[in-house]
Amino acid sequence: MDTKLIDALKDRIGSTKVLTDDNTLRSRAHDYWVVANLRAWRGDAMPMPGVVIRPTTIEDVQKTVRVATEHKAPLMPFGLGSGVCAGVAPDDKTLLLDMSALNKTRFIDATNLLAGFDAGKNGMDAEDAVAAKNLTIGHWPQSIALSSVGGWVSTRASGQFSTAYGNIEDIVYDIEAVLPNGDLVTLGKAPRAAAGPDLRHLLMGAEGTMGVITGVTLALRRAPEKRGFSAFYAPTMQAGFDMQRQLVQSEWRPPVMRQYDHPEVDRLFKEHVRGEDALLLMVHEGPEARVDAERAAAYAIAAQAGLTNADPVVCEEWLARRNHVPNWQELFEQTIIADTVEVAAKWTDIGAVYEETVASLKQVPGVVNASAHSSHVYQTGINLYFTFAALEEDPRKMEEIYFECWDRVMKATAKNGGGIAHHHGAGRLRKPYLPMDLGTEGVDLLRRVKQAVDPAGIMNPGNLIPD
Ligand SMILES: Cc1cc2nc3c(=O)[nH]c(=O)nc-3n(C[C@H](O)[C@H](O)[C@H](O)COP(=O)(O)OP(=O)(O)OC[C@H]3O[C@@H](n4cnc5c(N)ncnc54)[C@H](O)[C@@H]3O)c2cc1C
Image (cartoon, rainbow, N blue to C red; front, side, top):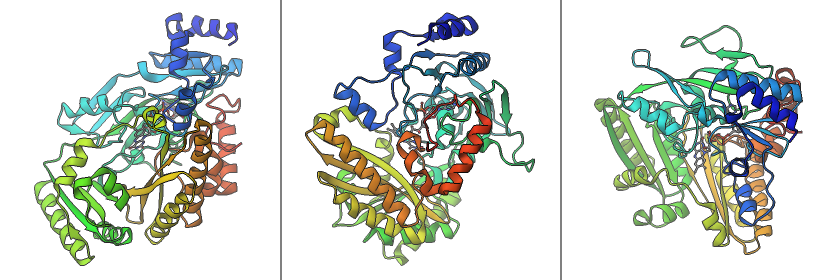
């Protein structure tokens, strides 16, 4: 790394916030992406950032962005590194902007149901802060304790309770960000606006390519009065999808609706296996009368749709275990390469996306598991979260199998009308497949927007936007 650049950073923001020691650089060399972890585990020489900058004020971020622009140096925001699509993949020319020290709760407003956080705030800490006032953000990604509020916005994250409470784009009230020219903007001012395009969406899902998010205001909810559970067996995945469609299209909104295919029931809920059935579990929340009415409606619609009742205790078992974090290294040691891939499709397409993707994954030599569950439900359709696992002793071949599996999920989903990314973002992993969702003209538009916002191309170059 150019010493003039390091000196300029130290000069502008102070030497204690500019770190070049080996341990810090190594700890920020990649995110949670399986392949980066595989390469590190097998001892490959891993590229590392040239310098890690740990801002504690917004001015620090502005000064860093200006130094990066002056030196035409790539700048890569790092939230808490739980991304799974290689959004963080620095090399020795990269200034890595570690947002984790910018982590204050700015305010909690219990009347307007809003809370402001610095972007580096840990998600669980943010939720705990509002829970102390009997409020909730209602955004529960499985990675809640590993991810930052700014990371949620940057990747367009979804929480486990999204069916009623929405995805992050429904929860964000305003976004404060430093643009690549160093300007500070706050986008979003009132509960709704018609003052031109919604510029918050330039930052939402931009994965660090359009600027640095420094603060986020999120909409809150009051803690629910009651929680209830229901669970069902579906003879086929399609039967379960049909029941879920009828339920949400009848205007019921259980925050959690999760439907596991038989292999996943067998792996995750062994005590609840029934033949080859899929298992659908729901969590109902809200005022007592609504929870009771919603549960009654779910049981009635399920019976009409040919589903049968399962023990709702399975919902409590899921709640207790829901934030389990996989340890990739343990799997590699057992010669297993695995990953999850989330997609979404309309109700009329989701059955084919499920059937064809699972069938295609099973054709990959070494694959021992190809399964899926759904977990985010809309009036218009539903997501699927595929899991694949393959046995392979040669760590180099593991990578080939991995990319082959991903390719098959992307192609089978797109061929059947599905969208190739539901909530993990695109990163460098999904980047080649982006035209499947945006079309070539859409990708071209995205490139032109990027060029206008970041003409020097300093913000997370190589991420998200196809070359
Ligand atoms: C076990 C596990 C479970 C997960 N479960 C879920 C889930 O249920 N739902 C879900 O949506 N995701 C899930 N994820 C994925 C991941 O947690 C999310 O993508 C999360 O939002 C990333 O946040 P982060 O702070 O860790 O971001 P990072 O990994 O640090 O960064 C992600 C991307 O955002 C950019 N970025 C980060 N912070 C900023 C900022 N302040 N300004 C500009 N750009 C920024 C980075 O440059 C990068 O491109 C899971 C991941 C793991 C490992």
